[in-house]
Image (cartoon, rainbow, N blue to C red; front, side, top):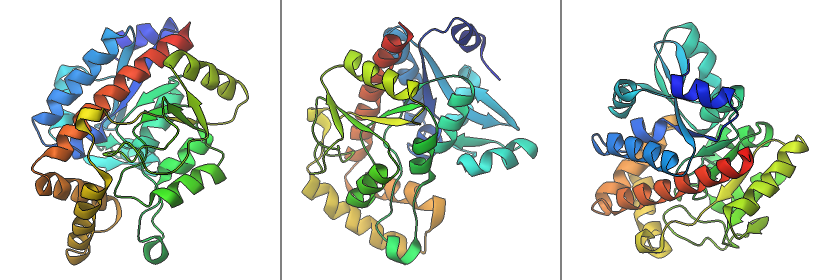
Length: 295
C-alpha cells in the first residue's frame, strides 16, 4: 500500500527516500522514536524529496506511513522482519518493522533507489562460534538500492564485515571520507572502495553502478563531529554489553536491540544522541542524492 503522497511521487518519477521502521520500533525508546520518525520525514521533504517509511502492518506492506501508522510503529509493539520473514508475515496478517534487508527489498519493488538508515548489519563478533552474518550484506549484493548510512554497527566485527562486502562486490562509497565509519565513531581504519566529495558525485557513481545491473551500494557518512564517540570509549562499553548478552543467553535477532539498549544505559544516553544525529545526517544526504538521481 502507498500513501497518496508516495503514489504521486513514484508515478512522477520524483525523488523518493526509503526509511526503515526497525530503527523506530526497536532501535529507540518511545517517544524518542516517534520524534525521530517525524523529524526524518521532515528532513527528507526539506531537501525536495518524498519520504517513504516502510513497514508491514496487518499483513500489508506499507510504502509510506500516515501519522497514525507512524506512531503505531514507533511504539515498538510489533515484530522485527528481515527479507526472509516478509512472505510469512503478509500471508498470516502479521505486523512488523522492516530491517535493512526487508526495507531494501520492498523499496526496490516500488522502484525506490535510495534508502537512509543508521547503520547496516554485518558479521557478528562471535562468527567462529555462532556463524551469525546479517542478511543485509547479501541483500546489498543483489538489490539495486543505495543505502546511505554511518557504516556497519559498532557492535559488529567491522574488518570481517568490510571484507565480506568486498567479496560480495558491494561498493562502499565514502562521502568526504577515505575510511569506513564505525557508526558511533568517525574512523575504523578500514578503507572505502571509492571516495566522493559531494552528493552529486555520489549520484553519478550510483547511476553508472545501477545501469550496469550490479546490485546495491553503500554510501557511508561519518557521524557529525560534535556527536561522535571515541572508538576506545565505545569499544569498552561494547565489550561489557556483549558479556551481558552472553550471560543472559540473548541470541539471534534479539541481540542487536539488547546491545543497543545496554549501550544507551552504559553511556547515559550518549549513544542515543549520536544515533539521532547520524541518522538525521544520513536522511539529509540521501534526499540530496535522490534529487540528483531524479534529475
